[in-house]
Image 1 (cartoon, helix red, strand yellow):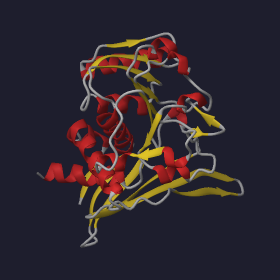
Image 2 (cartoon, rainbow, N blue to C red):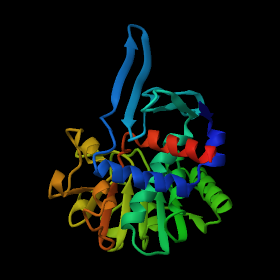
Image 3 (cartoon, helix red, strand yellow):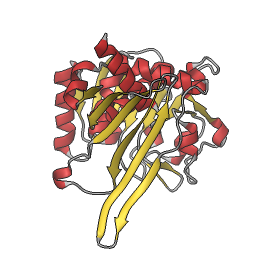
Length: 307
């Protein structure tokens, strides 16, 4: 059995491997060869005790099964992030073949799903990228995007100047990108062809009038009718995609385009050539975190390390 830490993942998991694995998992989901049930949430409360909520996402591929577990709904000192546990069992033998401990595998999985969406629907580059948000998820979106599209430059906005400046410096230094931290969200998204929204906002952080007619908008934050980081009118006339339509629709308040649930195209259908992707006009990617993909990514990482 292999045990991977965040340091191991930084060393061995490349953006190309991660995005390729997510594309394969999306295709498997489109063929009903990926088991991805809804998340399980177990509140951990008792009289005088509130330990948050234990969240479990389980999944199975044709070769492996496993789960990811983590705790939400509690504050850690200094804004620290809860560690996560991801497992991969061999379906045939039942052997536990790999474990990942830390926070990086899950975050890079989400980034790689964003990279897969860009591979299918972003269109020819080079792209001007706008990033709204400067947290861990925002950084992983850039990590993955550089493997699949040409990037002309990146503009980053977050409300805290220090955070947007830090991410801009990290991306410029680590990825060799031309990156600018800007003063407003509007300045970031003007003329951008790929826009990534990585916030927890429940009200719009951009205005549709700021956007180019041809652009891909990826939203990682809340996407409900009662609260979302994207404006309601953005979905009017846009082509809407998601990595996990059933997971999105499991929320009774799920944000829907004017055409309703059937107007949301699963990326698995595109991965299997069932739907021809649209690469012009406004395209909106609802990132929901397709369950089961953590198991697929951990398995691919273990296979790559074993050679």
